[in-house]
Amino acid sequence: MSLHNKRILLIISGGIAAYKALELIRLVRKSGGSVTAVMTKSAHEFVTPLSVAALSENKVYDELFNLTDEAEMGHITLSRENDLILVMPATANILAKMAHGIADDLPTTLLLATDSPVMVAPSMNVRMWQHQATQTNMQTLRDNGIKFVGPTEGDMACGEFGFGRLAEPTEILQALTNHFTTGKTLANKHVLITAGPTHEPIDPVRFIGNLSSGKQGYALAAAARDAGAKVTLITGPTNQELPIGVEVIKIQTADQMLDAVTNALPADIAIFAAAVADWKVAEYSTNKIKKQSNTDDKTLNFIENPDILKITSNLTKNRPPIVIGFAAETNDILANAQAKIKRKGCDLMVVNDVSPRTGIMGGDENQVSIINKHNQKIVQLARASKAEIAQQIIKYIGEL
Ligand code: C5P
Image 1 (spheres, rainbow, N blue to C red):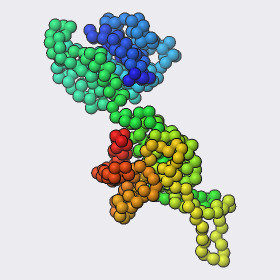
Image 2 (cartoon, rainbow, N blue to C red; image 1 turned 45 degrees about the vertical axis):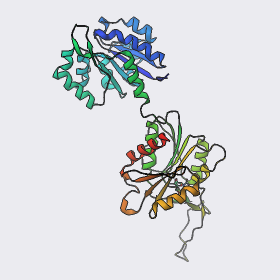
Image 3 (cartoon, rainbow, N blue to C red; image 1 turned 180 degrees about the vertical axis):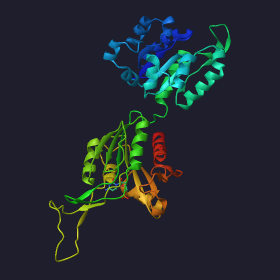
Image 4 (cartoon, protein in one colour; image 1 turned 90 degrees about the horizontal axis):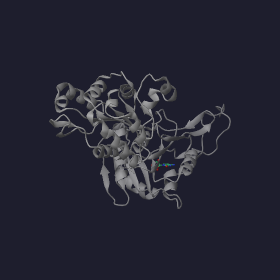
């Protein structure tokens, strides 16, 4: 059931191959997906809404200004409430409209209003396909991120032979399946990520913090989400925009972070990218500490914070199968990281050089190595943006 729960909005435009859309609907449903169909005016010449509705077991939409439909489901909602829009068959006419942003009926309005991925399966006469206008439109659509399946070469309904034949429904089903599975290396995995600094309060207006921006942890959360994982991001105070599609738990202190991590378990993968304060003040003052008149000096006593990475790595119950720590070092980078991986008991350690000359702390780029405790291998990644580094770390984890 490779299309399990996937909602396909199928736009049928008016080509002789429109009847093949009926077979596609059957295949998508057999594969666990659902289909809502929208037909262009000319598509009605080739298939009937009744057969489309019967096979999809869904209402078929075709008029932009049908007030009943607008009350039921507006065109914006219709354009968004799906996982992908497939145009099949896609005529030269609808491809041209898509390339130029023309929205003069319901299907083209949906295509302009949508934020879903769009795939098209072109189908037309070989000369129409080869025409410079169509080829230029295709290039525009490619540049706009539209996906294509077909056309293929073969005999055409018009008696000619060449490119322009609609891809077979089984090929289109495969393209849909590939779209939903490619790169989803962490599908069905729960990934827990800590990020940002912690703030350890001294009194109601003061705290001990650090310069962590949270950028790398947030980028990891987005990359894990894009790899299909269910992500819980436990974050200290940062200015980062919260990644969408991720469960975010905001905390202030290391103690709160530990509680949040414990409550979020079980997880398949835990990534500890937070810069947790090593110490907290021994005695929190409930009143603001006043400057003392008889002395300029003030001494605070510190006690150690819980080491969340170490605690999680050594759990006997609910220990995530893969626990990853981060080591920010300024000297003897690899040796220190090797020692740390043993001390903490995690499986992988992502190590980076945060000495000021690197500009990594708080910056947009990072350069890391990944140390694997089990095979002792070290993978060095080239310096890149924190988003790219995150994708590479997630890819590495996905391959384990
Ligand atoms: O010991 P150090 O702070 O260098 O270790 C860094 C790693 O340990 C990071 O992965 C960090 O998120 C984690 N850590 C933690 N709890 C602490 C201190 C560090 O989870 N109290």
